[in-house]
Amino acid sequence: MEKFINITLKVWRQNGPKDKGRFEIYKLNNITTDSSFLEMMDILNEQLIGEGKEPVAFDHDCREGICGMCSLYINGHPHGPDDDVTTCQLHMRKFKDGETITIEPWRSAAFPVIKDLIVNRSAFDQIIASGGYVSVSTGGVPDANAIPIPKADADEAMDAASCIGCGACVAACKNGSAMLFVSAKVSQLALLPQGRVEGARRAKAMVAKMDELGFGNCTNTGACEVECPKGISLSNIARLNREFLCAKLQD
Image (tube, rainbow, N blue to C red):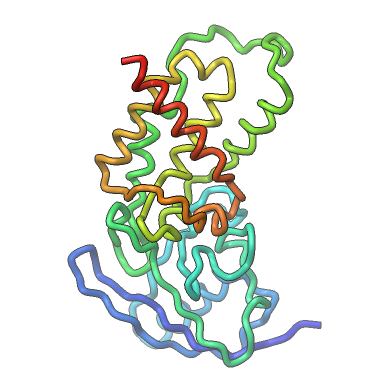
């Protein structure tokens, strides 16, 4: 049966990276628990526009848990209190009637605030551009069975490739580390023969770019794995460390 709740929103408002920013309080009544979190944000903005106020800027695109754009920090958790979901997959049934919900942007020096709840995550694009690809000529598309790959390796590579680059790992980490993201992107190629050719160059280049952009160091707290909406494993960080050390030893 459809239920309705009244909620109070404590939303971070900030005009830009140089603005100090502040929390603002909004009240919403009769929100159906069947609505998604982003639909609730749409309702908030419709209310604000109706009152002649500036709507809250927040990021979204596919609303299907694929693109990673919906980067909201909700009640102390990236993407909210539900497990293994992005913000767009979070529903209002996870909240109680009368609850106060605190909504913030990702908090990381490497992700400066553009406006309100939108942050600049182009640092991830720069890390990928530094080496997260295969540049060698592989010719035409080979037959699926032309290159034998053990199923365990293929499964691990696919698990790593499921990373959507949302940045929840960085937001959850007390050090603002991007190690889970970088390790997933390195692993998805390091586990496959097509990616091994440039493995050493890739590991060194992506780690160097990560450090250059100001991400923190990994101290194995594990918050990144817990908050990752795609369940990317910490074992990928161990693989990245091995790839990086082996690459340095080849110098």
